[in-house]
Length: 327
Image (cartoon, rainbow, N blue to C red):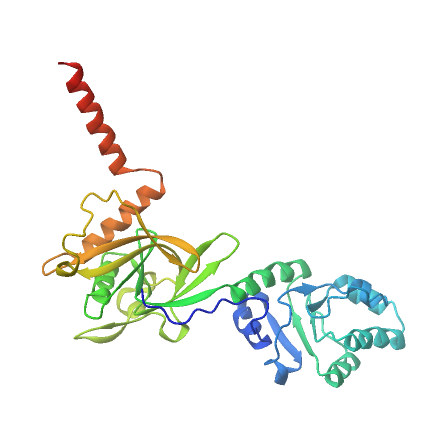
């Protein structure tokens, strides 16, 4: 399996505020109020913090590396103070290295606070979301940003609801097989190069296309096509769980090594996750579209707990036992 260098992001990886805004643009409904020219700065801790105690002057264990949320409670407390005390409390946050403040519930900073933020070189943002909603959604955005990732050479299609990735040498018919599956009502996820993301919490993988090539395919003899324009919007998926890997190999290269019964289950390890793996022999006249579709349907049965090889073995055993008992 040919892979581009993996990106296993961790706390030491660099995630910028620009990344945070780009990935969470729709979900978090954020707008930058101060510091738009500082978005290339790194998010030191991909988490949020409500600085209630810090606003009262208690800074022991203050999580300054996180983004600070100003919700209704924080805003109400600050409004109860005199202008001088209010500015002193916010200045103290900046003095203790706080770099980003997010106002929730549609609140906006006053001009004197904006001036303090500019002087401190900080970023101030605002969101229409409620505080608890922003905390919830930002956790998902950060999880997506921090998730281990890799890129695989190959094509991914949703087949019968299953995410199937197929790979093989150039000219093996990957894109043509994907095209045939799409014409049967299945959907393209990515063509030629697939981005794989790991959901660490659930230990599962998701595949998607790169943003620049999403929805496009290259078909030899035809050229570049836009799948949604040709086959409709339902023929494309943004992201899909990866549940089966199919490797196309020339029959002459693996003849004698093929498991005709399918008793030996194979897996390939991607980002620490074992994914079911099939080797599909390719030769002139073989209907790869039909074979991949059948392989996906078979894998769905296996996931549901059905074992056709085991069932056949048990049936043959019972038949043999019955024949022996009649002797």
